[in-house]
Length: 252
Image (tube, rainbow, N blue to C red; front, top):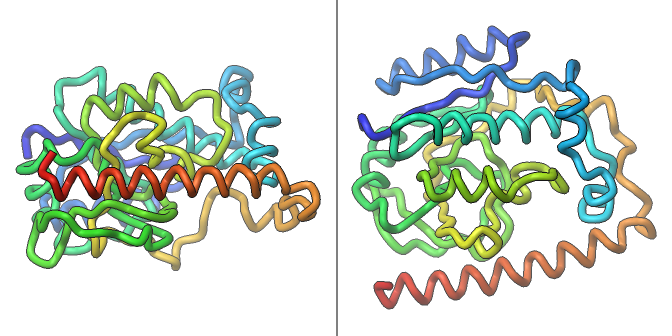
């Protein structure tokens, strides 16, 4: 595990969330480094310029939130700092993640089979229709995804993936968790561990600002470009997943 660096993304104004995840990581024996998150309440002009608002509205069918941009930039900063260091892999965690006892064993298994992935999702909002290809820990499988699987509260990346993300994720045109799993776009082996060794604690309120913008979704007639984008994106996801699954089964 000395090849692995763990980052926890945490806002300066959320010390309670840092305390909570610190206790979880200590219990599991996982050292970590805190990354001060980009605060949406204090975005600089340069940070605001990282958002392609027209592209976001076209692809997502709603108005962007400052909190989404702060989250996006925070993940990119974690990746940049990882690349500036010597570690081979990095585990990136949001501070509202729920860590299960199986996480250390899953991480060990993934590092033993590091040639089988570039980015692995360890938490999921949607199922992703996982197709298991390798047991990495008792009861936990590395899987190819055939459908959408959002969420970015816990994931593992290697240096190849981090470099691809740093070079290709800007400007922001979608929420981070809607784009970083596009393996076909970044030419990466994107996988999921199923069942996931991490979850989301619904008792913790989001800092994204969703509750303050309940009507940001456009009328359906203005969302037609977003519907078209999603249809094409999910088609590419399925084709990528099927091709990845075929390569896995052929041992390539």
